[in-house]
Image 1 (spheres, rainbow, N blue to C red):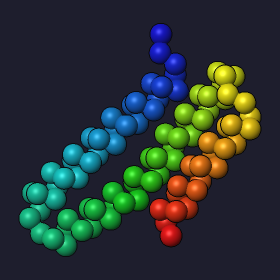
Image 2: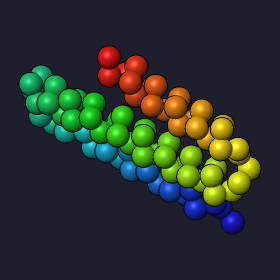
Image 3: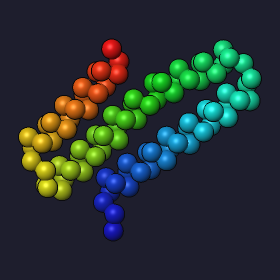
Image 4: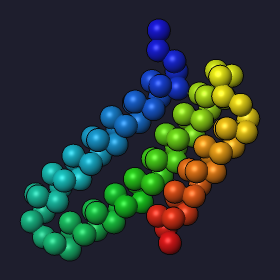
Length: 89
C-alpha cells in the first residue's frame, strides 16, 4: 500500500501537469501574445505555490514515518525556504 504522502504528492503533480497543458492550449487558442503572457504570469504564481505545498506534504510524510531526525527535517525545510527565496530575488 502506498503512503498517503506519496499519493498526495503525485496527485498534486498530475494536477499541475493538467493545469500546464490547459494553459498551453489556451495560449495556442488565443493566438495573441498579450493573452499568452497573462496566462504565463498566472502559471508563474501557480508553480512555486505548488512546489511549496508538495514539499510540505513530503516533509510531513517524512516526519510521520519517523525515519528522519528533526534536525534533518529542519534542514530540508530550510532548503525549500531558500529555494523559494532565491527564486523570488
